[in-house]
Image (cartoon, rainbow, N blue to C red; front, side):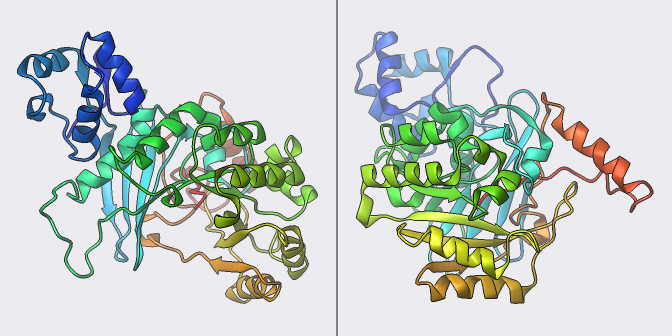
Length: 397
């Protein structure tokens, strides 16, 4: 399996068709070579230029000297009893991110990371507690899908999945580590490769970007992509959301929802809906009064609501609500006419459930150090290992 680039060769894995055309012109080659190579990389999963048989021998040899197709290194792979698969991937610089495959009866969803850590500091999010190192490159983002397909051997066109066998990837969600809109160019390039008919060919309704509310970049998104949109909301009023999602102080709920609606109008409006993500935290944002506020807030917004029971992690005092509180919250939304689903916990036995993904961030912000010091000071002689437990990231999906 290819490894992360350690030389001066140009990595072609994250380049769009337009970028590949420019690259081949720079080599003195015809632009149409871009489409050929794009198909070899993303439709056939080929990383060896010598195997690209519709290229001339001279071009194959030239590419072998100046270019490569290089994805992150797989550190580990674990499978859950429910079919969930989790990969720990080491990216350049030494940090690790994670990717998770979640099988369902009618789909297979890949949850993809966009940053090493996250510069936002949402109070319920373990990624934020780990701090931030850097953006992932386009090759490191699309490489997560490329590696997952290799892992399940789905690049083999002759392979047919047996009944009940998992592995086909039908959906991709940008809901792993990081805020995708803060890595705009690389995320857009990777998503466009996911949707390009000459690359992975996924439907625009099956590639979803989740944002906590970076309004200026959301306003720019429709100029570059027409992917599905999820809003990581978690509170129905600004006072509470300011505490849970601090970026709300800069871009409050009304501004965020207006921007989300403008995006939907630009890419297909009345035929598509926004996914609202709402993590339910016991005694924090799960009351019936807040459910009523949420129902009112969204009454004129074409949307579906995903209710995500909070999964506890180190460095957080939050708790998961009882099933009774979760279902009562859902009932208020449904009685108001909303589509509201409770997200089923998956991959818990391999720490792949929402809020349980283990990453390793070389934190240049030192935020993780400050959180651990604060927890150590507040816990005193608490349970052994509580302040030194393995770091986790929150997957917003």
